[in-house]
Length: 240
Image (cartoon, rainbow, N blue to C red; front, side, top):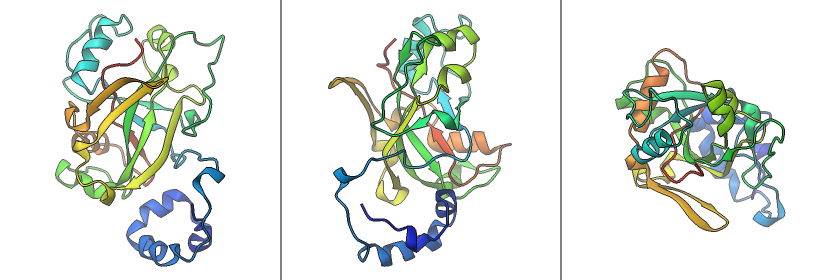
């Protein structure tokens, strides 16, 4: 771990992502000269605190659509039908926590908690009306998200914001990597384990609505900002 605060001055992380093409050469030139600390000597926080609510995508893997439709938590009219368009909801910024931090169980608020491993897409260059052909030009990089969910709240309120947004219910990280580190994002495999037992495993290629489609859909009428995060959906194998 190397502290590059002196290279960046008072710049916040969203500004770093937005100006990455200019900032990156300075970082690469200075990195080797910065004192290094062992990874196990620091506590890792979430890679970034998003500037606003995380854009999340529901029911974006076919097998998960079917398991959620059978679970009793979805509305009957939706059932196991594959969505005709991306299902977009959000998680509050206050749900974000470190990758290894404890989850607050919120006793008295919920009794039915669940995990959902997801690939997170981090926006670098903002914009509105982004076409799918140019979508990856706006991606800074990627991280890992657990879309922790209070299923009973999700069912009770007939929408997903409250059930998805409780404090500490968005562990993120441990790392964020720039897009050039990933030769083919569709070849990545999203996995989760509970007490060492593999529960979820599916390639990003299995997304019903791929990353360019998600960026095009969200940005059609909403300006994406540097530091925005899109959680792309979870595969089958969640607790329900």
